[in-house]
Image 1 (cartoon, rainbow, N blue to C red):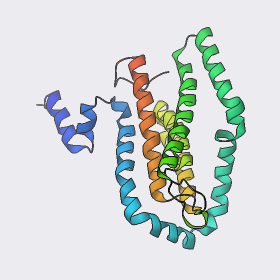
Image 2 (cartoon, rainbow, N blue to C red; image 1 turned 60 degrees about the vertical axis):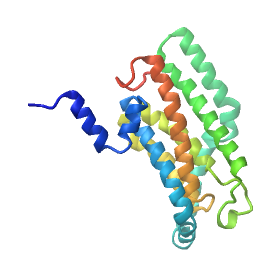
Image 3 (cartoon, helix red, strand yellow; image 1 turned 90 degrees about the vertical axis):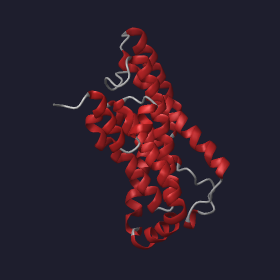
Image 4 (spheres, rainbow, N blue to C red; image 1 turned 120 degrees about the horizontal axis):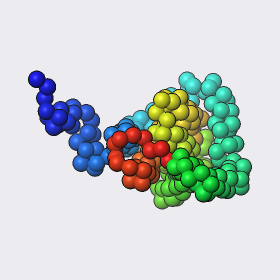
Length: 230
């Protein structure tokens, strides 16, 4: 005889990390991995701050300097699209116009994804910059003269953008998340940020993504049934 549904649900709450908290928050099941990512990065951040930041920065300078130029070139390529003036001058306007036009002409919910990209991209950068100014942590190594290291703005922006796509297209989640992970690694290896800066960026981006996607669930139908179709 199989256990009642309630008993199975209770056992899952006991076995899975954060599951009880997520259940109480009524997080849609298909978004729980985002909240788990937020909590994991937030919990690891102080660990990295107290015990890992300086040893890892020193170790990366001594052993990973050969990867610096290649990783910097990859980051610069993505930056030219997502962080460059093309995005600010044309990308935001184009996405908003596409969203409004598609919404009015076709009335298909999918096009709300365009607006979500704009909102997450802008909110990620604004939130990261506010925290940078408030905390004012120096950068590691040779970049110590550049202020405002915490959190990593690159990590926050890239995770804020690609987590949205990963949530909407779970089949390609691993491939999509490879980009922001690579960016975060580059920020540490090139001594632009400490590990805790990157983890804080991940936590902030995943928190914002979870918040906006939870709103999307409230607009698109019952929680937990499927990924929002936008």
